[in-house]
Length: 240
Length: 141
Image (cartoon, each protein chain N blue to C red):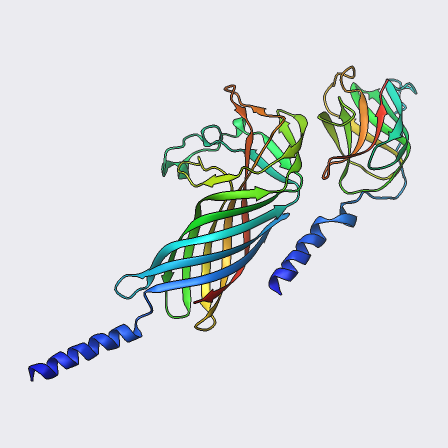
């Protein structure tokens, strides 16, 4: 009798494990987004662990290359200390924009490739539908030098060769450095292997000046300028 | 296919023809009131730049206390994103952007904001902003 009960329990456990999704969710993804005179193409590999009793949650790391391109995009004063009223972590969400400190660098033909380590989070509503968020953490950038125009207090000057900084890192309080991608997405699995995503992308693109600099009201010389690009698009995933 | 369409769409919207200046001949009226008279404050003939050709004259008029730059009888080779600058240098580093070129042909007027120091801003330029290429320049004297 006891043996029978043990067997039944084992079978129940095995059955439960059999219908649970696998512990690991790894996939390759390619995505394209487009906005106003700008766009991006991103390729990534993601390794997520499924979490929770029913394994509905997932979190993990990825590697992503984002190619961002545009024409005549306005990049504004980047250092958080000048651009926002506070750089305190979390409070930054409610921080004001210090527009009196902003100058505009109009980059004529920005093109940035940023290769970054990313953090990935997701929730599975059911077998077909899931939603998630991902954000770049740290990495490197390379891109095209471009002429740019710095408009400062109504005075316009030419920067012949604005360039993208080579190092990227996500920091708190709008103190980020370099070019970083992040996405909110909704995913639909077409089959066991293939899935499609609808994406809202928020991309920090950064360019630096070489020959001319902004003089901030406090006297700081600024050579970093940032475009916060909002774009929308779609992606295609292949699950291993 | 999606990415192909995306790329094509972006290229189509970002390049060439639709970035070029209109080519219909303009004949805007030169300032002729008592304040302006027919005397230009500064003037010069256009010379070709390294990336384009410009013929005709540039003249600065003062009308009702405001300066106006006139490109008179110009013929300009078309290009992407052409702007008219008042510049301190032949290759513009410090300049005032007077706006997009209205037409590659004819006579056209551009308002000059403020009261720039014409001892410093000595060039009228036709400049391709997107590629930082000089099409033509006129030294204002």
